[in-house]
Image (tube, rainbow over all chains, first blue to last red):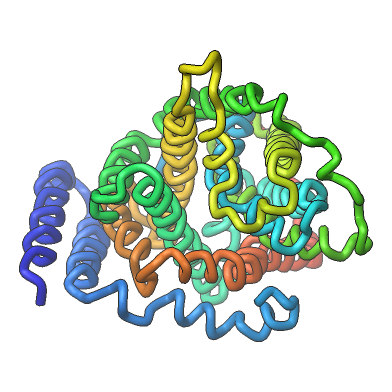
Length: 74
Length: 366
């Protein structure tokens, strides 16, 4: 756990929440839920050491490797 | 209705110009040169076929399902479950690709101009500004982009002082090893041209959508010309050394000296780079935000813009510790991935729509 990342991401997420939430009073529940889920997902993801973690790029490279080999791109 | 704004077909064409070109103009020439050598100026000409194809597909699908984006008509064409899956695929693709665009932007700014600034500050500040613009709807995006696009297009003249240093003989021998090297050099640029499918998200809000095809075609032609122009310029300037450079355009402008004292033109490259990427990231961000709201059938997309912006910033660093890996992804994985998503799936959708006898809807202009 890196405290600077934790603090920075929490401040950013908090600012977004404070900016958007008062405007959403009249929105249906589904809109609010989508907003909160996306925001919390981003906050959770920010806590990982993302740069050195395998993720979408690793997955896509594994999936498309045979094709790029076929095209002799490497 | 999620979006109340309207844009014109001409605005759409102008927006798409930097949306394709912003990153292509700095990064793609060197990648093309690796495969095509001194035929690299032919590669954008061949690659533009992808642009015409995806644009025509987006337009034809739009004629059959006006006022809908690919997220919505995907469901109509392929059925509910498959349509939702296709929609999610598109959203994840554009979200992740936007992350990589932000990464290319931040890498360029930090390696060439601000080496001591943490990359996350560079990318997060741009995404914050873009989010504010996207939040104001399509008209906000269109107008801010229109202004930026004009400056971006005008920047082509800054290379002109280099004309005395050009050596046109570098172009010879044309097609020394046949057409194959040029075709291999086109694989990466054509994936950039595939991004013309983004007009699927803009066409529903174009007031004179009938002219969409016309201005879209002009946009593809303009992008092709701009890429041929830069590729020829750097080929004449460097010859086959182009492939050793990461940002040939930037290196070229560093040579410019007018009257012995006007120098440092790379700051202008920096300016067009920021403006062009602002437009590019806005369009991608807009497509993901409104697409996500359409996918979940929400009443408003504005609240989603900032949370999605956070995800864009995070995907710009996810499993990409350095620029070597970004370059590897762009030149090996992305071309195939982008072509399958943006040309393959739309072509499939179009075929299914044709087989089901979906005729174009007569235009009822609102």
